[in-house]
Length: 335
Ligand code: AMP
Image 1 (tube, rainbow, N blue to C red):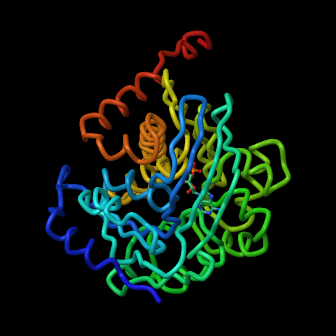
Image 2 (tube, rainbow, N blue to C red; image 1 turned 60 degrees about the vertical axis):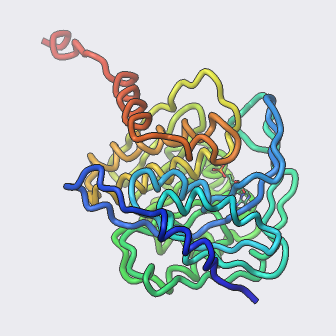
C-alpha cells in the first residue's frame, strides 16, 4: 500500500511562490526519478547517520536553484517526512513521491583519503525493490527528464509514461552496471544523454581510455556523454566535439556524497532554465553543474545546497570563468 505525501503537498503549496530570477528565460520544469534515501556516511572528517540522501534528493536540491523540479520516488514508513520539507519549500513538487509500507532505501558508504571514490558498505533497496514509478498526469509532459541513479528497469518504465520530452538524460552506478547491464544498454538506446563518472565509464565499456569509452557509449545511442572525474573536472563528449571543465579547487571537501547528482542538477537545471540545447549552452551548463557539485561536497547530506543563495552560485560561476580564462600569443608565434 502506498500513498502520496499529501501533508507535504499542502505545505508545498503554502510555501512555494514561483521565483522569476531571469524573466526572459523559460524556466522549464525538470522531472527527476531517482532514489530518496537515508544515507550513513563516513569520511576522514566525520560521520553522519541516517541523513537525507539519494540521487533524486541531491538532484532536486541542486536543480531547484535554477528551475522548477518534479520529483518521483518512494520512501518507507520509517522516513522522517518532515526532513523533505525544505525541498518542498524550495519549490520541489513532491506529488510523485509515494510512501509505501516497508523500510526506506538505505545506503552506507565510506570515503578514505581518496575522496574521489566511494566504497559502498551496504545497500538496502527496501521499498525500492517493489517500486514501479507512476508519473503523475501533470508531470508527463515535462520537457526535461532526468533518470537519476536507480534500477534501470524503473528508468525504462518512466520512458513509457512521458510525452516527447526535449531532452532525456540518465545516470547509473557500479551497483547497476554489475546487476543490470542488458537493461542499461537498452536504456542508452533511448536517451539523449548519459552521465557517468570515470570509474563507471571504464567498468561499463571495459575501455581504460576515456575518449574510447565515450565513443563506445555514443555508438549505443546517446547524442551526448558526460564523464565526471571528481576533483579533476568533467568532459562533455558529442560525436564531433569535446569540452572539458575543471572542478572548482576547493580547499576543504567534507563529504563527496551527492556530488554527481548535484552536478546533474546544475547541468540539466541550467538547460531547462534557459531552454537552449545549443552546444555553446551545453558548455555553460557543464560549468553550472561543476559549480553545484562543488557546493554539495562542503557539508554532509544536502545541507549546503539548501542554504545557498543565488549570489553564491553566480559568484562561483564567475570564479570558474577566471579559472579557465587565459591569453594566447599563438597567432603572433605563428606569424
Ligand atoms: P553520488 O552523486 O554518485 O555521490 O550519489 C550519492 C547518492 O546515491 C547517495 O545519496 C545514495 O543514497 C545514492 N545511492 C547509492 N547507491 C545507490 C543505488 N544502488 N541506487 C540508487 N541510488 C543509490
